[in-house]
Image 1 (tube, rainbow, N blue to C red):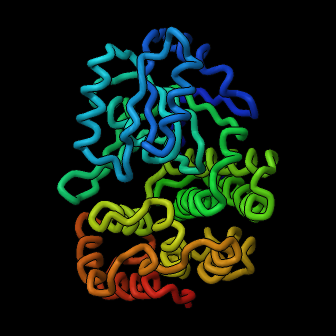
Image 2: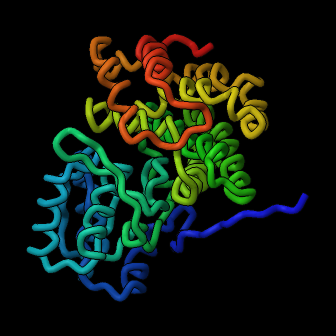
Length: 352
C-alpha cells in the first residue's frame, strides 16, 4: 500500500563532532551578528565566561541565571541584560534550562540563536518553548523559537555527571517514544525515533561504566539530536502533558521527571498503540513499560516521584491539572486512570 503523509522539516544548521566548539565564532559571523550574549545556568557560569572570552570581540557578556522550566521573570531579566549590552544574538551553553531561556528571548525579539548543547535535552532542535508563570507551565510553538545553529561537541559532555547523563538521555528517549504513536507521525519521524532510541540504549550503559568514553558520548548526542528532531516535528501526548504539569506546577526537576514517568506513560498507552510500539518493545525485552523501567533501574536512574519531593497528597491535584487542556493521546485520558498511573510513578512500582 503506498504511503500518504505530510513531512515538514525544521530548518537548522547542525555542527556535529568532537572539537566543533572551535567553530563557534565562525557560526556567529555566518549569522551576520557581532555581539553575542552568552547564556548559562549559575552552575555553568565559569564555562560561559570562558566561551565569551573565546568569542573575542564577538562576546557581549554573560547572563548566567537560566533556571528550570523557563520562569517568565528570569526571561524578563535576561531581556534587560540583552538590551543593556546591545546584543544582537544569543549563545546558549548548556541543557534544557539555558536553551529554553535562549528560545524565550528569541520569541520576544527574534534574536538569532546558537546553541552549544551539553546535555541530551533535544529541545535545541524544536520550535517549541515551555515557560512557567504563576506556577503554570504552558507551551507555545513558533518559527522564531527554533535555534538557527546547534553545535554538538561530545568533548563538552565528558564532565556531565553520570546521573544527569542518564536522566537527560531517558528524557530524550521519551520524545522519540511518544513520536512513535503521535497522531501526525510519518515514516521519516518513525525512522528517526527508532534510530534515536537505539543509539541512546546503546550509549547510556557505556557512559555509566566509562563516563569519559568519547564514542559513547557522541552516540548519545546523536541519539538526542534525532529524538529532539522528532519532538519538534510531530505532536506529543500524555507523557509530555504529565511532565509539564509536574514540572510547572510542582517544580519537579525536568529530566528526572521524564525519566521516572516514561515507563508508566508507555504502559498506559501500550495496548492502544501496540502495533507502532512493537518494534521498540523488542529492544527492551518485549514488554515496553516494564522493559523501560528495568533499563532505567539498571542505569541507576530515579524511579519514584516521591524521591523528587512530590507528596502523595498532591497526586489528586496533579491528576486534575493534567486533565485540563489534555493533549491528544492514543489511549483515552481518564482522570481515575491517570491518578492510578501517578500512584505507580510516585511509589516507584514497576508498571504492570
